[in-house]
Image (tube, rainbow, N blue to C red; front, side):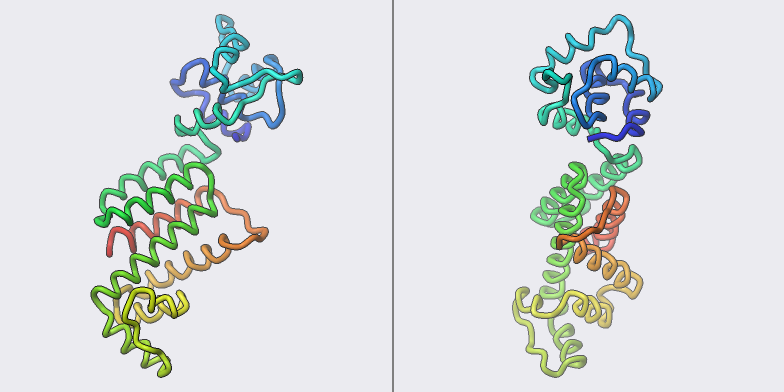
Length: 240
């Protein structure tokens, strides 16, 4: 759940004894002995006080850590405890980004949209990075469809027909989905619903969504997801 390098970020905060032990335990990929736990904490600049009894603390953790024949290991309950404390693989800076993103939620007027974006942020906080990217894009494109349908449908259809004479006028929001999303962004930029720079940023988000929506070898980290969600928040969710 945590890398050894993450310990330097989290161990030097005002957490309870049990939570500190869980943090160290979460950096192991296999069961460990108490001496191993203490040694790893020391490497991160934290010396476990002699007055502590790590074994007793973990034993009384209510199932958040268990002792097996091979040693101590953190359970899913323990991992969830750390997530509830805001502790995960994402860096301290990324944690702050999640807080900043949540502050932007209050600017979203539509309750359903706000709930959808909040779920995308939760995926980010739970390290479900591909899900966060896919969900946030789905919400953003839905907002754009609704905005065009409610305010610019005639202009949109006119521009769509100018580019493609075979285009059949859209009447409902579902009709708008007949057009490829990349082309949809081109059309709404052409009638000044979004600017060229915004279109370029949204096309990047779309490409990222397409990559994350299919099994492949692409690797992404928290900062990429935070950037993706922030672009959509500032240029779609809080604007339309």
